[in-house]
Amino acid sequence: MARSVIITSFLEYPVDIQALLKPGDYIVCLDGGYDIALAQGIRPDLLLGDFDSVSAGLPVGAEADGIEIRRYPPEKDYTDLELAFRVLDPGATPELLVIGGLGGRLDQTAINLQMLARYTAAPAEGPESGEKTDAAANADADPKYVRIEIIDGHNRCFAVHGDPSLPQEARRLYRIPAEAGCYLSLLPINGDCCGVSLQGVKYPLDQAVLRWGASLGTSNEFREHEAVLSLESGCLLVITTRGNQADRI
Image (cartoon, rainbow, N blue to C red):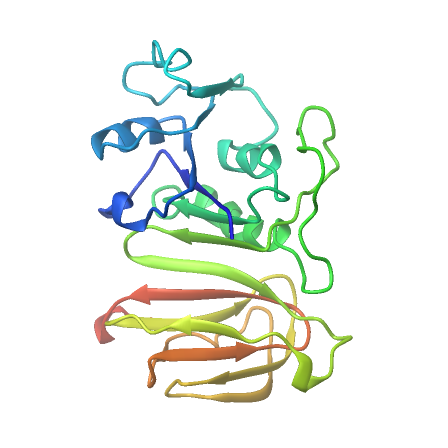
């Protein structure tokens, strides 16, 4: 599956981005993400943002090097990351990997997690295809991607959607690889989630209901090489995070 890799301006933890890249990835740098890319020897395909956090300003010669640049004013209705979601084409790259975007400013982290739900497709929808969606041209259009994953060297998260029209045996299975020293949490992101089943963990679930705003789905532990998740309805934020017993609240 074709993929876009988005490098944000802020990384709280070290990330070896080169190790995450695959042949054919389309690489997007948001503003100061260009500095991060250069430091790791990565040449982007697209630079996007208002370029207020690039150390040397708008990179000279980038266009001559074949790098596309999309510059926006600082006073805009979207964050740089949301602009990327709206500018990229889910018909061409239905999967996105976002590097960074967590930690630092709490407001930025919170909206980035909400956007995981907004810009991913429920199983019955599938990704939109056709012409690219330009936020300035069509402010009401929400492109839908098959998968958007955010990682920051300490956490990994993505959103999954249920489809209540499907019987239990036909529901999509989401396989979550175990990571050493990581907890697994399932958080309802925009309302209750029903018919949640989870296997391969210390605390399995069978057709459970996870209530919005309740902590039942947090701090599970892997017991197999992967956890297998399915759900009937709602949207879950799936998070694997490094930690220890002292981190529990």
